[in-house]
Image (cartoon, rainbow, N blue to C red; front, side, top):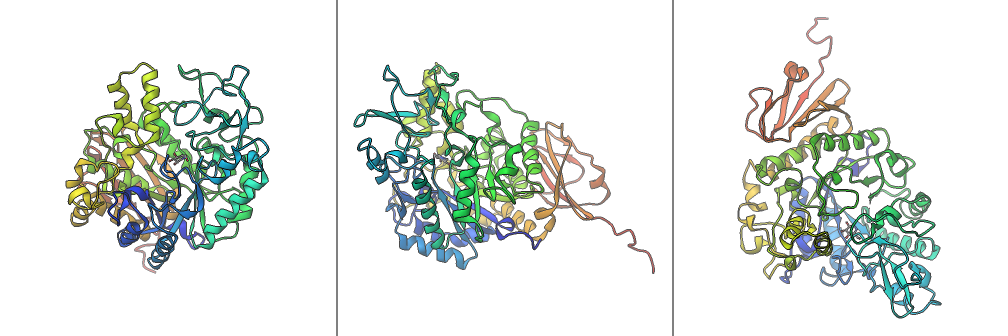
Length: 564
Ligand code: NOJ
């Protein structure tokens, strides 16, 4: 236990500042709003807050397009507000974790503005410029992750620049040592401010392939997802180890990298003793419902065994070396209650099922704002009501693929990143107590019933269930360091596993279906003590619809009861 680092024992809470709490009344969340809510966060048992980007940005991708890495976006506050947040959080035992977006900058960053001036500019090589094909077409047929070509032609210098994401997010050229050095300086600048670590954005894309060539088309636009060409390219780990040496090594912080394209088999090279990072946000359990092309209009059916296999593989891959960041939500995903369960399922029960898994897997639970309330998706009436740049791109792709406007909108309802970005629901007052102004994105209509204030008062709420789980995780070392063994692997209704430490075991049983199912595990029958459940009672070992239970089975000392 004492070998564990602080970030392995705690919970991480992710905040999307624009949607969290607005202290100024301009309709958009801000840093002082977060500071106001620190007690709420502390009471959840959180030891680290991951802040999505708060740097100066034109906000084309809500801050993932950075124009100045060393200053705070005025809409979020000032550097003084940031320092205050770091200090106030620290007083409550919470450390602030910054989001480093180093694959790309904003096209409004001074580096890119210089880079595009002329071919001879000293920043030209800081980005990735290529000639057009003889017919003027982009150098390759790669589709950017938000849709459209991954290349944009720049009239001034008659070349294309590469952007994995939107055209306003040009990719940096990591081959250039000047680029790498300035990025390391920026990370160190934030460490000097006292932050507790970093979430590192889109890091698998920083190394580009040696050769830029067309790939087989995966859609009617004749393009292929840029991800296939640029994710996790040979040589990337050398950059990452340099990054670690220059910034993170030997510091009492943690790093968690977003790692699209890294398989669970590769995890040992990426995390752990000899890895580049402490944790990796990999998506094997989140990508179940999507083809590799990541087109929302091509959803894929999935079965529970697929989810269980993905999670179990990740557990095994990090069992001896490395550490797992458990998560079901973030700012890029729909709400988990609607992603993993049908819309008609009892939302409170299923939110608690996911919470049970989140807290009982081996690893650090990452909670996304509002997940602890069981917040749900929204359905806005037209694409114009959405803010998310990916939603707009995916809507266009669906139309190109021949779907009607209504069908294209339905894909957006299911997958839009705005589902997770609606304002946090604090109270049943106007705009859910998020702002006194007009919220930048509509508040989910269910705020009247589903809000933090109400849930704090209701013993049966999702929020109070989170509190109980957090307490269990503090009480039982078995949840921190016990091994993980999957049970009932082939079962399509129940996700079951065992955590074992010395003589003691915990058995976790979660019914992911709306039908009851008997689950006669003899070890529970023998001496299982129910620690927590999302139903009031547990009369027998038949799990009801969306029922979750955690049992403790304490091993008996063989000499117990014997007289000496
Ligand atoms: C991943 C981030 O999580 C997402 O929100 C962003 O749009 C892209 N990277 C680009 O930075």
